[in-house]
Length: 186
Image 1 (cartoon, rainbow, N blue to C red):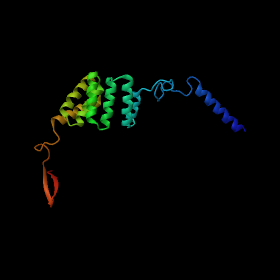
Image 2 (image 1 turned 90 degrees about the horizontal axis):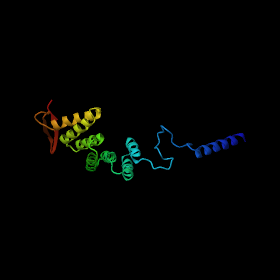
Image 3 (image 1 turned 30 degrees about the horizontal axis):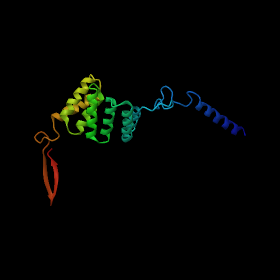
Image 4 (image 1 turned 60 degrees about the horizontal axis):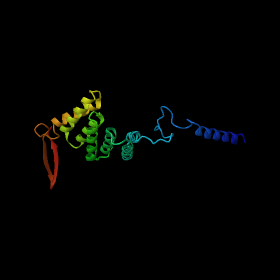
């Protein structure tokens, strides 16, 4: 019988704590989305960022669209949508959203950087280098990632993937009927 009373007492305490102000709701520094316990909507941008970090790009895109409905098409929201599209391999849509983001706010560094990444993925290294220069300048050179992206784009735009006189030459060698072996000179 004493075990049953203590279990009932614990259940009563938990019920009262959940009903009291501040009970089981989020507190300062909580890892959970703010506002959920107070009857407010959860920030779609924050949810989307967390889903992106978890690798849930399709769900993040939906959260970003909710953020766009709540907050409007801000540079931050458009950039987030473009980034999710990039992760989903939708390069044309990503480019369009990121260009819109840079038009909304020409000083928004993440949109410029992510636009450069999309352009690199599309094989547009020269334009990507120009975009990374803008991002690097706006960032005042503080981000190592943007600096590395710029360096990579410049190298890629100055030296195309295949340049026979400078790269190791390739030779095709016949191995039988319709078979060829690709050899490189050492």
